[in-house]
Length: 149
Image 1 (cartoon, rainbow, N blue to C red):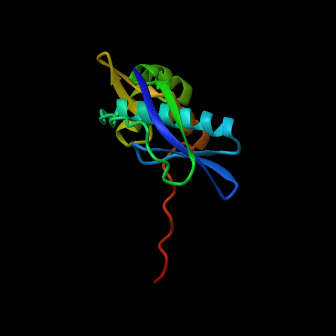
Image 2 (tube, one colour):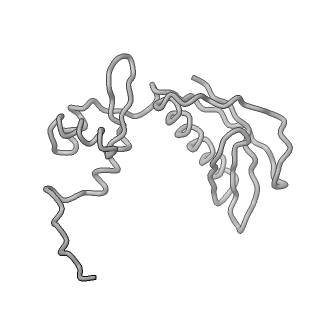
């Protein structure tokens, strides 16, 4: 699904900032090209997040008056559940070195993100990559000794 929104780009403390008019949040870049690319990345992630969580897309407005004395840009992305980088539970388990059952537990515990598409559950590749970067130790955490009050 194509999503088109207007952003204001303005300078603040030596960085260029890009904020959408119709949503909370925004991004930044060191130059105009980078801030435009970052705005597209931000919009892609925001629309995919909304699609996965069944959050309505805001109505887009255009011709907005800049609030911070900047300039308006229009950003368009093709985003939805179908564009999310995703893995099956078996693929996620293989990458993480755990069982499929453990992947389900991790999803239930909020340690991995998942969503339904075409009647099938998927695990986001980004959440698996983030988990791999954390590289948690195997087993249960040690109990900390009680401290005297």
